[in-house]
Length: 365
Image (cartoon, rainbow, N blue to C red):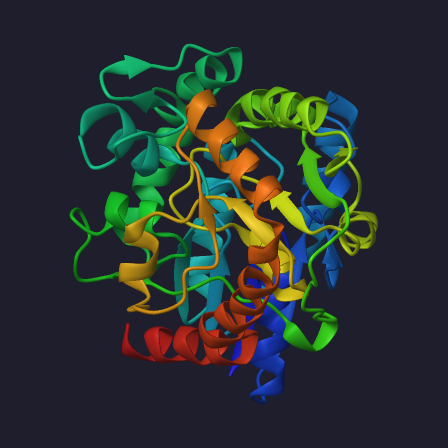
Protein backbone atom coordinates (compact mmCIF):
# COMPACT_ATOMS: atom_id res chain seq x y z
CA UNK A 1 0.00 0.00 0.00
CA UNK A 2 1.23 3.53 -0.81
CA UNK A 3 0.56 5.93 2.06
CA UNK A 4 1.04 9.69 2.35
CA UNK A 5 1.06 11.24 5.84
CA UNK A 6 0.64 15.02 5.68
CA UNK A 7 1.52 17.26 8.63
CA UNK A 8 3.03 16.53 12.03
CA UNK A 9 2.21 16.73 15.74
CA UNK A 10 4.83 15.61 18.25
CA UNK A 11 6.33 13.00 15.92
CA UNK A 12 3.08 11.03 15.59
CA UNK A 13 3.26 10.62 11.81
CA UNK A 14 6.97 9.83 11.78
CA UNK A 15 6.52 7.09 14.39
CA UNK A 16 3.48 5.74 12.55
CA UNK A 17 5.45 5.72 9.28
CA UNK A 18 8.17 3.58 10.89
CA UNK A 19 5.56 1.02 11.93
CA UNK A 20 3.93 0.99 8.50
CA UNK A 21 7.28 0.54 6.77
CA UNK A 22 8.12 -2.39 9.04
CA UNK A 23 4.86 -3.99 7.88
CA UNK A 24 5.99 -3.62 4.27
CA UNK A 25 4.22 -0.48 3.09
CA UNK A 26 5.56 2.48 1.12
CA UNK A 27 5.19 5.65 3.20
CA UNK A 28 5.97 9.33 2.65
CA UNK A 29 5.80 11.88 5.47
CA UNK A 30 5.49 15.48 4.31
CA UNK A 31 5.42 18.18 7.00
CA UNK A 32 7.03 21.28 8.46
CA UNK A 33 8.54 19.18 11.24
CA UNK A 34 6.11 20.71 13.75
CA UNK A 35 8.05 23.98 13.56
CA UNK A 36 10.99 24.49 15.91
CA UNK A 37 10.61 20.93 17.26
CA UNK A 38 12.09 19.78 13.94
CA UNK A 39 10.71 16.25 13.75
CA UNK A 40 12.04 14.14 10.86
CA UNK A 41 10.17 14.09 7.54
CA UNK A 42 10.72 12.88 3.98
CA UNK A 43 9.50 16.09 2.36
CA UNK A 44 10.05 19.39 4.16
CA UNK A 45 7.18 21.88 3.85
CA UNK A 46 8.76 24.34 6.26
CA UNK A 47 7.65 27.87 7.03
CA UNK A 48 10.23 29.44 9.36
CA UNK A 49 8.06 32.43 10.36
CA UNK A 50 4.55 33.76 9.86
CA UNK A 51 5.81 36.57 7.63
CA UNK A 52 4.22 37.17 4.24
CA UNK A 53 7.49 36.30 2.51
CA UNK A 54 7.78 32.94 4.27
CA UNK A 55 4.09 32.32 3.66
CA UNK A 56 4.49 32.79 -0.09
CA UNK A 57 7.66 30.67 -0.09
CA UNK A 58 5.87 27.91 1.79
CA UNK A 59 2.93 28.03 -0.63
CA UNK A 60 5.26 27.79 -3.64
CA UNK A 61 7.03 24.84 -2.01
CA UNK A 62 3.69 23.08 -1.51
CA UNK A 63 2.63 23.75 -5.10
CA UNK A 64 5.94 22.37 -6.36
CA UNK A 65 5.37 19.11 -4.48
CA UNK A 66 1.65 18.74 -5.29
CA UNK A 67 2.18 16.56 -8.39
CA UNK A 68 4.04 14.04 -6.20
CA UNK A 69 1.05 13.87 -3.83
CA UNK A 70 -0.92 11.73 -6.29
CA UNK A 71 -1.73 8.05 -6.70
CA UNK A 72 -1.56 7.08 -3.04
CA UNK A 73 -3.91 4.43 -1.68
CA UNK A 74 -4.27 6.36 1.56
CA UNK A 75 -3.63 9.98 2.51
CA UNK A 76 -3.89 10.96 6.16
CA UNK A 77 -4.01 14.57 7.36
CA UNK A 78 -2.60 15.32 10.79
CA UNK A 79 -5.50 17.77 11.28
CA UNK A 80 -7.40 20.34 9.19
CA UNK A 81 -4.24 22.42 9.77
CA UNK A 82 -2.08 19.95 7.85
CA UNK A 83 -0.09 22.67 6.07
CA UNK A 84 1.43 25.80 7.60
CA UNK A 85 -1.21 27.98 5.93
CA UNK A 86 -4.54 29.29 7.15
CA UNK A 87 -6.84 26.27 7.32
CA UNK A 88 -9.35 27.57 4.79
CA UNK A 89 -6.51 28.02 2.31
CA UNK A 90 -5.68 24.35 2.58
CA UNK A 91 -9.12 23.32 1.29
CA UNK A 92 -8.12 23.49 -2.41
CA UNK A 93 -5.21 21.18 -1.55
CA UNK A 94 -7.59 18.86 0.31
CA UNK A 95 -9.92 18.68 -2.71
CA UNK A 96 -6.89 17.99 -4.93
CA UNK A 97 -5.88 15.12 -2.64
CA UNK A 98 -9.39 13.72 -2.74
CA UNK A 99 -9.44 13.83 -6.54
CA UNK A 100 -6.08 12.20 -7.23
CA UNK A 101 -5.81 9.59 -4.45
CA UNK A 102 -7.71 6.57 -3.21
CA UNK A 103 -8.86 7.53 0.29
CA UNK A 104 -8.31 10.55 2.53
CA UNK A 105 -8.51 10.34 6.33
CA UNK A 106 -8.56 13.07 8.96
CA UNK A 107 -6.61 12.88 12.19
CA UNK A 108 -8.37 14.05 15.35
CA UNK A 109 -5.02 14.61 17.01
CA UNK A 110 -5.26 18.10 18.47
CA UNK A 111 -7.35 21.16 19.18
CA UNK A 112 -9.85 21.74 16.37
CA UNK A 113 -13.45 22.83 15.88
CA UNK A 114 -15.08 19.61 17.12
CA UNK A 115 -12.94 19.36 20.24
CA UNK A 116 -13.60 23.01 21.10
CA UNK A 117 -17.29 22.52 20.40
CA UNK A 118 -17.37 19.61 22.84
CA UNK A 119 -15.58 21.76 25.44
CA UNK A 120 -17.81 24.79 24.99
CA UNK A 121 -21.23 23.27 24.27
CA UNK A 122 -21.38 19.95 26.14
CA UNK A 123 -20.71 18.46 29.56
CA UNK A 124 -18.60 15.57 28.24
CA UNK A 125 -15.54 16.80 30.14
CA UNK A 126 -15.31 17.54 33.85
CA UNK A 127 -12.57 20.01 32.95
CA UNK A 128 -10.65 21.04 29.84
CA UNK A 129 -8.22 23.69 28.63
CA UNK A 130 -11.25 25.81 27.65
CA UNK A 131 -13.69 25.29 30.52
CA UNK A 132 -13.91 23.80 34.02
CA UNK A 133 -17.47 23.28 35.17
CA UNK A 134 -19.31 26.42 34.07
CA UNK A 135 -16.19 28.58 34.24
CA UNK A 136 -14.55 29.49 30.95
CA UNK A 137 -10.76 29.93 30.87
CA UNK A 138 -10.32 33.45 29.57
CA UNK A 139 -6.70 33.37 28.36
CA UNK A 140 -5.16 35.22 25.43
CA UNK A 141 -4.32 31.92 23.72
CA UNK A 142 -7.89 30.67 24.11
CA UNK A 143 -9.32 33.91 22.73
CA UNK A 144 -7.12 33.64 19.66
CA UNK A 145 -7.89 29.94 19.20
CA UNK A 146 -11.64 30.43 19.53
CA UNK A 147 -11.64 33.24 17.00
CA UNK A 148 -10.28 31.01 14.25
CA UNK A 149 -11.10 27.43 15.27
CA UNK A 150 -14.60 27.95 16.72
CA UNK A 151 -15.95 30.95 14.81
CA UNK A 152 -13.67 31.46 11.82
CA UNK A 153 -12.17 29.88 8.74
CA UNK A 154 -10.53 26.96 10.53
CA UNK A 155 -13.92 25.91 11.88
CA UNK A 156 -15.42 25.91 8.38
CA UNK A 157 -12.45 23.97 7.00
CA UNK A 158 -12.72 21.38 9.76
CA UNK A 159 -16.42 20.80 9.10
CA UNK A 160 -15.85 20.47 5.36
CA UNK A 161 -13.06 17.91 5.75
CA UNK A 162 -14.76 15.91 8.52
CA UNK A 163 -17.99 15.62 6.57
CA UNK A 164 -16.38 14.51 3.30
CA UNK A 165 -13.33 12.43 4.29
CA UNK A 166 -13.35 8.63 4.37
CA UNK A 167 -12.72 8.32 8.09
CA UNK A 168 -11.51 10.01 11.26
CA UNK A 169 -8.80 8.67 13.57
CA UNK A 170 -8.74 9.93 17.18
CA UNK A 171 -5.59 9.41 19.25
CA UNK A 172 -6.94 10.42 22.69
CA UNK A 173 -10.16 9.68 24.56
CA UNK A 174 -11.06 13.38 24.64
CA UNK A 175 -10.83 13.71 20.85
CA UNK A 176 -12.72 10.47 20.26
CA UNK A 177 -15.73 11.54 22.34
CA UNK A 178 -15.78 14.91 20.55
CA UNK A 179 -16.12 13.31 17.09
CA UNK A 180 -17.84 9.96 17.68
CA UNK A 181 -21.37 11.23 18.49
CA UNK A 182 -21.39 13.27 15.26
CA UNK A 183 -19.63 10.77 12.98
CA UNK A 184 -20.30 7.39 14.59
CA UNK A 185 -19.80 5.34 11.43
CA UNK A 186 -16.41 6.72 10.50
CA UNK A 187 -14.67 7.61 13.77
CA UNK A 188 -12.25 5.27 15.52
CA UNK A 189 -9.92 5.50 18.49
CA UNK A 190 -6.37 4.28 17.82
CA UNK A 191 -3.60 4.78 20.42
CA UNK A 192 -0.58 6.98 19.80
CA UNK A 193 2.39 5.15 18.21
CA UNK A 194 5.73 5.04 20.04
CA UNK A 195 8.77 3.63 18.25
CA UNK A 196 10.23 1.47 21.00
CA UNK A 197 13.17 0.46 18.83
CA UNK A 198 14.59 3.98 19.18
CA UNK A 199 14.17 4.20 22.96
CA UNK A 200 16.39 2.89 25.73
CA UNK A 201 14.21 1.88 28.68
CA UNK A 202 15.65 2.05 32.17
CA UNK A 203 13.67 1.04 35.24
CA UNK A 204 14.42 3.70 37.85
CA UNK A 205 15.72 2.76 41.27
CA UNK A 206 14.85 4.75 44.38
CA UNK A 207 16.69 8.03 43.76
CA UNK A 208 18.67 9.84 46.40
CA UNK A 209 17.31 13.11 45.01
CA UNK A 210 14.18 12.97 42.85
CA UNK A 211 14.67 14.69 39.46
CA UNK A 212 11.48 16.36 38.23
CA UNK A 213 11.45 17.20 34.51
CA UNK A 214 9.15 19.82 32.98
CA UNK A 215 9.21 20.97 29.37
CA UNK A 216 7.70 24.37 28.65
CA UNK A 217 6.40 25.74 25.36
CA UNK A 218 6.33 29.44 26.14
CA UNK A 219 3.56 30.13 23.63
CA UNK A 220 1.38 27.32 24.99
CA UNK A 221 2.05 27.36 28.71
CA UNK A 222 -1.58 28.13 29.55
CA UNK A 223 -2.80 25.33 27.27
CA UNK A 224 -0.41 22.70 28.62
CA UNK A 225 -0.96 23.87 32.18
CA UNK A 226 2.72 24.49 32.88
CA UNK A 227 1.84 28.01 34.03
CA UNK A 228 0.16 26.33 37.01
CA UNK A 229 2.31 23.21 37.42
CA UNK A 230 5.70 24.94 37.43
CA UNK A 231 5.07 27.33 40.37
CA UNK A 232 3.65 24.45 42.42
CA UNK A 233 6.64 22.27 41.53
CA UNK A 234 9.01 25.05 42.60
CA UNK A 235 7.12 25.36 45.87
CA UNK A 236 7.57 21.64 46.57
CA UNK A 237 11.26 21.82 45.64
CA UNK A 238 11.72 24.82 47.93
CA UNK A 239 10.17 22.90 50.83
CA UNK A 240 12.21 19.74 50.16
CA UNK A 241 15.51 20.96 48.62
CA UNK A 242 17.43 17.90 49.84
CA UNK A 243 14.89 15.43 48.42
CA UNK A 244 14.20 16.74 44.92
CA UNK A 245 15.43 18.97 42.11
CA UNK A 246 13.86 20.42 38.96
CA UNK A 247 15.05 20.17 35.35
CA UNK A 248 13.23 22.91 33.44
CA UNK A 249 13.56 23.26 29.65
CA UNK A 250 12.04 25.82 27.30
CA UNK A 251 11.25 25.39 23.58
CA UNK A 252 14.00 22.92 22.72
CA UNK A 253 14.06 20.73 19.59
CA UNK A 254 12.81 17.16 19.89
CA UNK A 255 16.26 15.51 19.83
CA UNK A 256 17.57 17.75 22.61
CA UNK A 257 14.34 17.30 24.59
CA UNK A 258 14.86 13.53 24.60
CA UNK A 259 18.43 13.86 25.83
CA UNK A 260 17.46 16.15 28.69
CA UNK A 261 14.70 13.76 29.73
CA UNK A 262 17.00 10.74 30.04
CA UNK A 263 18.07 11.55 33.60
CA UNK A 264 14.59 12.37 34.86
CA UNK A 265 12.66 10.34 37.42
CA UNK A 266 9.32 12.16 37.05
CA UNK A 267 7.92 14.22 34.19
CA UNK A 268 5.12 16.80 34.46
CA UNK A 269 2.93 17.23 31.38
CA UNK A 270 -0.54 18.13 30.08
CA UNK A 271 -2.51 19.32 33.11
CA UNK A 272 -5.88 19.41 31.31
CA UNK A 273 -5.54 16.08 29.52
CA UNK A 274 -7.33 12.86 30.45
CA UNK A 275 -4.74 10.78 28.63
CA UNK A 276 -0.95 10.80 28.19
CA UNK A 277 0.45 12.70 25.21
CA UNK A 278 3.27 11.68 22.85
CA UNK A 279 5.79 13.40 25.14
CA UNK A 280 4.37 11.62 28.19
CA UNK A 281 4.45 8.24 26.45
CA UNK A 282 8.02 8.86 25.32
CA UNK A 283 8.94 9.54 28.94
CA UNK A 284 7.08 6.44 30.13
CA UNK A 285 8.82 4.27 27.53
CA UNK A 286 12.13 5.46 28.97
CA UNK A 287 10.98 4.47 32.46
CA UNK A 288 10.08 7.96 33.66
CA UNK A 289 6.99 8.33 35.85
CA UNK A 290 4.48 10.84 34.48
CA UNK A 291 2.44 13.35 36.47
CA UNK A 292 -0.40 14.46 34.20
CA UNK A 293 -3.38 12.95 32.39
CA UNK A 294 -4.34 9.50 33.65
CA UNK A 295 -8.07 9.64 34.26
CA UNK A 296 -10.24 6.48 34.42
CA UNK A 297 -11.48 7.18 30.87
CA UNK A 298 -7.94 6.68 29.59
CA UNK A 299 -7.67 3.18 30.99
CA UNK A 300 -11.23 2.27 30.04
CA UNK A 301 -10.83 3.08 26.33
CA UNK A 302 -7.72 0.85 26.28
CA UNK A 303 -9.47 -1.90 28.27
CA UNK A 304 -6.61 -1.68 30.77
CA UNK A 305 -7.68 -3.09 34.14
CA UNK A 306 -4.37 -3.62 35.97
CA UNK A 307 -1.64 -1.11 35.11
CA UNK A 308 -1.91 2.35 36.69
CA UNK A 309 1.46 3.99 36.01
CA UNK A 310 0.38 7.64 35.71
CA UNK A 311 0.06 9.98 38.68
CA UNK A 312 -3.15 11.71 37.64
CA UNK A 313 -3.61 15.33 38.72
CA UNK A 314 -6.57 17.65 38.57
CA UNK A 315 -6.18 21.25 37.34
CA UNK A 316 -6.10 22.49 40.93
CA UNK A 317 -3.01 23.75 42.74
CA UNK A 318 -3.82 21.90 45.96
CA UNK A 319 -4.22 18.57 44.17
CA UNK A 320 -0.96 19.06 42.24
CA UNK A 321 0.93 20.02 45.40
CA UNK A 322 -0.44 17.09 47.39
CA UNK A 323 0.51 14.52 44.74
CA UNK A 324 3.97 15.98 44.10
CA UNK A 325 4.67 16.07 47.82
CA UNK A 326 3.44 12.49 48.16
CA UNK A 327 5.84 11.14 45.54
CA UNK A 328 8.73 13.10 47.10
CA UNK A 329 7.99 11.60 50.51
CA UNK A 330 7.37 8.12 49.10
CA UNK A 331 10.17 7.69 46.59
CA UNK A 332 10.03 3.94 47.17
CA UNK A 333 7.09 3.91 44.73
CA UNK A 334 9.31 5.01 41.83
CA UNK A 335 10.64 1.56 40.76
CA UNK A 336 7.13 0.07 40.51
CA UNK A 337 5.70 3.08 38.66
CA UNK A 338 8.72 3.09 36.33
CA UNK A 339 8.31 -0.61 35.51
CA UNK A 340 4.57 -0.19 34.95
CA UNK A 341 5.21 2.78 32.66
CA UNK A 342 7.48 0.75 30.39
CA UNK A 343 5.04 -2.17 30.33
CA UNK A 344 2.08 0.14 29.62
CA UNK A 345 3.68 1.70 26.54
CA UNK A 346 4.84 -1.66 25.18
CA UNK A 347 1.37 -3.12 25.67
CA UNK A 348 -0.73 -0.34 24.14
CA UNK A 349 1.48 1.97 22.07
CA UNK A 350 4.03 -0.14 20.19
CA UNK A 351 4.27 1.58 16.80
CA UNK A 352 4.01 -1.64 14.80
CA UNK A 353 0.92 -2.81 16.66
CA UNK A 354 -0.65 0.65 16.27
CA UNK A 355 0.25 0.76 12.56
CA UNK A 356 -1.69 -2.46 12.03
CA UNK A 357 -4.73 -0.90 13.70
CA UNK A 358 -4.49 2.01 11.25
CA UNK A 359 -4.26 -0.38 8.30
CA UNK A 360 -7.32 -2.31 9.48
CA UNK A 361 -9.35 0.89 9.78
CA UNK A 362 -8.22 2.29 6.44
CA UNK A 363 -9.15 -0.94 4.67
CA UNK A 364 -12.60 -1.04 6.28
CA UNK A 365 -13.45 2.54 5.27
